Length: 313
Ligand code: NDP
Image 1 (cartoon, protein in one colour):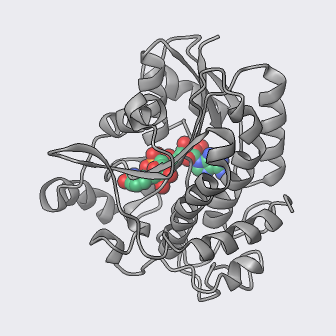
Image 2: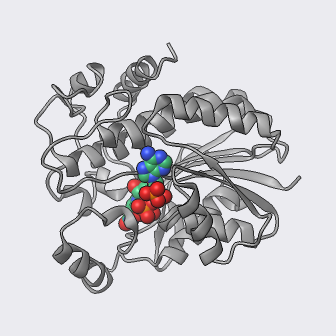
């Protein structure tokens, strides 16, 4: 059997292009973990992934039951596991009212953070036994959650505060992790901060004992993906040229996909606990995270609350 990577949200954008890049090596089989089977199949065909280089397994991260079912189905498939890539995300920048997952969590936190939190924990043992002996668990991060950067300082800024909203389960009455008023853009940024903190916690808790490499990345601004589907039309028109010519942070879907594929498979990018970013002059480097992301006692508290919410403790 070829090495196997599970990629969540592989039906479009970064996940699809990483799946394509991995499959093209001929050394990897990609399990596309997607909520829309038909969309995933059409997307794989459209980018020319060869038949047999991928399979599609149903996963809806906005339902903990679906996450558990996915893990059961994956285990039953008998496939080996060498890399788990938590890539799927929702972004609701124009939402006036919060939306919720099947379990009643605010949608961005529930999908981007809690769904992946449960998924990674349930698959750790499989990863630990990866036949390629260099297992990786990657959770896609973002510059927007890192307040030590220019992009991260565009309001509303990420801030998990005292985690009181999360402790309550980010429910309708208290949908933000910091317990403040609902803001869709901030909820996304907060969820990405939680993703990056989770990677660091996983590294500290499990790397030595399991040999799994845990890493996060910011692939660059992929201004044309479906992530911005809910944004106002003017934003969608102006954002790509703004990123291309003004901030110069723009990266094509294909290049971003190659970057993620490298974090999954390049022997040189196997540092656990890393947060990979790219510079146009020097290529990949282990970037500095914000003060909040680096706050290990807060991350430990986030871990405990998350474990409770998804039913792991
Ligand atoms: P896309 O919207 O193109 O891709 C997101 C994927 O997530 C889609 O495949 C989508 O599935 C899937 N998804 C959403 N909700 C669920 C769910 N409940 N269950 C399963 N899958 C779900 O956006 P991107 O490719 O841009 O985003 C990929 C990652 O990259 C995200 O983690 C994002 O935060 C990160 N990122 C993106 C940047 C950018 O500039 N675009 C910059 C930095 C980070 P479906 O097709 O069914 O909707």
